[in-house]
Image 1 (cartoon, helix red, strand yellow):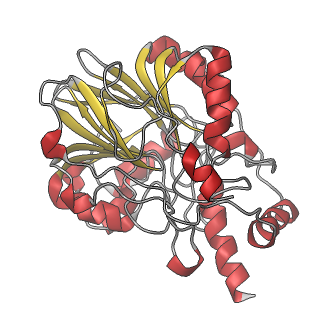
Image 2: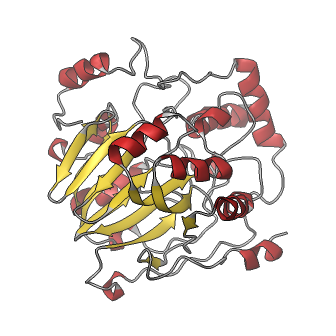
Length: 366
């Protein structure tokens, strides 16, 4: 019973789991209370999403613990190309590498941008009961270059990892996070002058890069008792010559069209599509692979990269299902997309990202 209770606490957090950089708590609270998404008790989506009932949550957690289908992870780790930054070309306006899950290392017009850094072996508060990484890491946090900007989309354990954040503190200039997330980062030792909390449609200028927080349809929590106490977000990253969209965790929502109008068109989009499911209150806050294709079109993207797969077992399907469904949907829609190997350097339109590299491992892990 104790094991089940601990698992319930974790899975709730994981699956359902600002222009000013002032760390002052009163200032933060005032901003929270004035935020349009704050209903007086918690943050909410523009179109409020249903919270599952206790009975529905119980059914879902029971299925997660006792009815998981086989093949949610690979028998052996998915391989990763060792990331050697010394061999990256120096004359590229945009290049990036997928480090697994939703962690991406971008070099954009001379700036290093890291998204949702997750370098730990498990994604959760208690290692024994948390989803384990089933792909290799191409690089450690300590081996990364000096980072100009770390972007955090929300506070779930698979996106906001304490050990990874603490390892990055000495080598990162700016941490940008949604409103109210900064208080946790302060507790972990991030200096207040390095933290910027953004509300939707607010921006932060980092030299030649403009970082804009934009709506997403998701939720936040790190336990059963703090649901939606912090905001969640997507991001636009605009330079002089490049425009990138990072979806964060999100379900389908009509504001995607507004994002396209206000911030697009985008040269590159990153859309999550690996934690969808049938359960009430869950299917509304994650994209299916087919919805990820539709969302890419809605924000006026040119090239897209599927994300949030191939790293942690977070749902009720075989590990390869999301990417296989995605390539079918993308081909039917006639959109341009990349499927990078973990750790592969990508220069969009020029180098990498065009192989079905995962398919040999499907047969090996039947």
